[in-house]
Every structure is written in C-alpha cells, then in structure tokens.
Length: 282
Length: 254
Image (cartoon, rainbow over all chains, first blue to last red; front, top):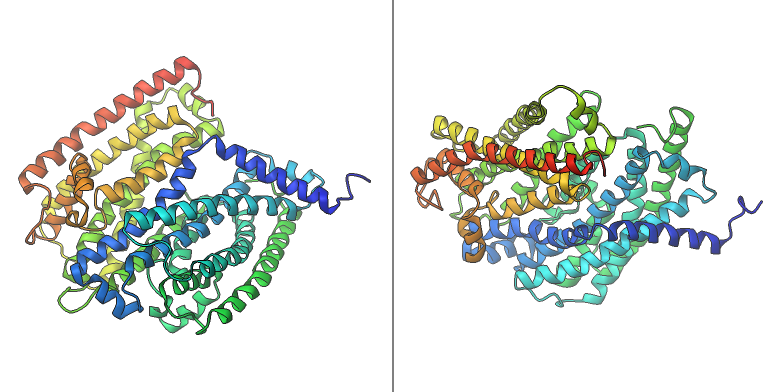
C-alpha cells in the first residue's frame, strides 16, 4: 500500500533526488559546465566575424537595414545563448533516456514506484538549473568579449520571457524523448534536431526573412518566440504581435499546450513500445 | 550504418540545414559592392566547411568510437582478436572518408544551386592539399583516440570542445583577417590553419590577399609535412596510450 500511494511531498522528494543525482554525476565532469559557457560565444562569433569580413565598417548599417537593429553583436549573442538552452534541454534529456536504455537501467526505473512525470520533472529541473547558470555566465561573458553592454534594454522583461519560455521548451523535450524511445538513435536525432531548432528559432536571423510558409511553421515552435521576445526586450526590436503582453500570452498558451502534448506523445509511444519489444531494448 | 537508417538520412539533412542558416545569416550583411555568396565569401565558407566536416567527423568517428567500444565492453575483445590495431583505426577513418566526402559533395551542389556557382580553380593542386590535409586530420584523430583511452568519459566533451576550438582558431568559416591579433598568433601555430588557408585560396584562384598566412609555396611545404608526420605522431601517441592502459589494466574500464 505504501509503495503504491505517493503523496505530493514524496513526489517532491523524488524530484529532488533525481535532480541531485544528475547534479552529482555532472559534478564529476566539470568540463561540461565550462563547455556550456564557451560554446555560445563560439557560435555567436561565426556570423559576427563573417559579417565584419563581408561588410567591414558597414556591417552594423547593413544589419540595421535588414533586421531593425544595428547591434548585430548582441543580436547574435542572444540568439546563440537561447539556442544553447534549447540544445541543452534536448541533449541532456535525450542522452539521459538513451543512456538509461543502454546501461539497462531504464526498465529498473520503470519498476520503481514513482510516476514517470516525477522522473521527467527531476530531469527537467536539473536541465533548467544547469542551463540557466550557463546562460547567465555565457551571456555576460559573450557581451564582455564582444564589447557589448549586457544590461541594455528591459532586462527584467527579458528574464521573465526566458523563465516562462523554459516551460514549453521542456515540454518539447518530452516530445523528443518519445522520439528517442521510438527510434533509438539519440545521436543522429539530437544532431539533426539541434540544427533544425537553430534554423527554426532564427539563431542568426529574424524568422521574418524566411518565406511565408516557413515563418508560420517557425512560429509554431516556442523557442522562436522566446528568442524574438528576448531580442525585442533587450534591443528594442518589434514583438511578433506588436506589444510584449500579446507575445507573453502566446508563450503562456505554449506553457499549457507543449508540456501536455509532449507528455501525451511520450506516454503513447512508451505504451506502444512496452507492448512490443519493451523499453530496455536498444 | 544500414541498421540505423535515420543516421544515414540525418547526416545529409543536417548539412543542408547548417548551410541554409549560414546563407541566410550572410545575406543580412550583404549590400552594394559586397558581391554576394558567389563573390568569394561562398568559397571561403564552403571550402573551410569541407575541412571542418572531415575534422569533426574524424574526432567523433575515431575518438568517440573507441570510447563507445569501451562502454559496450567490446574494446578488450577487439584487442584479443589477431587483427592489426592500426587496421582497426584506419577502418574507422575509411567510413569517414567515403561518407563525409559524399556529404561534402552534396553540400557543394546545394550551395551552387541555392546561392550561385562557387569558384573551382587549380583543381589538381587543391586535391593534393586536400589529400595531405585529410592525412594530417586523420593523424589528429589517432592522437585523439589515444587521449580517449586515457580520458574516458571526458572524451565526449573534448571532441565537442576541440571541434569548436579548431573551427574558430583555424578560421574555417571566415577569413583569418577578421581574427583578433592574439587569436591569429595562436592560429599560426596550428598546421591545420595553413591547410584551410591553402585549400580555399587555391580553389578560389589566389584572389588579392590570399593566401592570408604565408606564401602558397611555404604553406604547401607545411601542409605536406603535416600530412606525412601527423599520422605517424598520432599513431605513436596511440601506441603509448594503449601500452599505458594495458599495463594499468584499464583498457575496458570506464
């Protein structure tokens, strides 16, 4: 009886245990933290240096003509850092699931009395913790390296967009977990997904420069909104719907839809796999 | 590869997405007089991209595969087989050579179709530079495999980090001229930088200011020496690491 009845407090403790477990494991490999902080700067550096090579002193003016801001450096740094958060959520979640499969512990986890949602919440919490620390350091560091003021624009609103945006991003991770369980090829799926994500969210460009059909597709993707809205609040660009609160309302809608849809797809796939070969097979 | 068809498809799709993003990003900086993708920058990006693809693939296929064999517990079994260890390393490289080569050709066709013709000058000499650059890159892969044996779990991180470090330091997606002086100083110490510079300058027909680091004759000497020496050095390091882990009994330990 005790094993089948889980109070809210017990679930919270289980979430905390999963969170601490992942934190302890990564604390053995501290280089990953350093990597999380360095990569966004390198990713941002490519278009910044390319822009300077192409346009020289006119780079800012040409960027202004095409995007509405002359601050192309901050534009790229924001894009790269938001991308890193999305990419991290996919990597950490996907590899957690895949590693559990390959080391043969996924089935054991399924036999434990906690719900899957508890396990997933623990992983999401750990990913959010790690990503936010990396984001803070990488964004500030990137701004310092490229000589940009990190505290320009409406910083509080930008942080708010970022925090709200994390919820649908982890909802997408559930959906992504379903793909890993279904296709079992985490490496290739993550590789493709992270570049597709970068293209869809407009890591280097506003999605409005894309053809109309692609724009609509990109707007179905929550990170596109997070990215554009953070840029808008920090760099004074326009929001998708003109005012920040309309965009925020859309993000709230994503906060409800994305986790529910992601979790539903995850459960549906899991059920299908359990009926066939079982979740532990890879 | 055939057991994981998604891997097969994804490696192509991934390249198209990356190239597509770069083209859009560059278009935001184009204006009067900048020439567009076919005006030189297409060549700078795409020819550097080819070497980046091989480098990245080498680090992952050679280095990471060793790690994977460790995790799966098959590395020790492989060592008990009478097959040559060198052949085992080279076999991993050959997959990279064929598959990444096809990916690169597909990417070049894609860019030519989307953004206009790329310059293809001095094909014979460019092929010579590519062969020796790849030979040196594979040597780096052997050295990385040695590191993997010692570093174990940190090898993933190192492979990821190294590809980004080389991407930046060897100016694979942009000209060396935009690098800050201190970074350029480090770039000059890396032989792969001369491979990138010589390869794209040769294919672009040596436009004014190219090659950027040294005269082409000197760069060819460096590229040739890199291509000849690095596989020997890399394999030497691999043998040292292998001996060390076998003595310590940590070959299959992870």
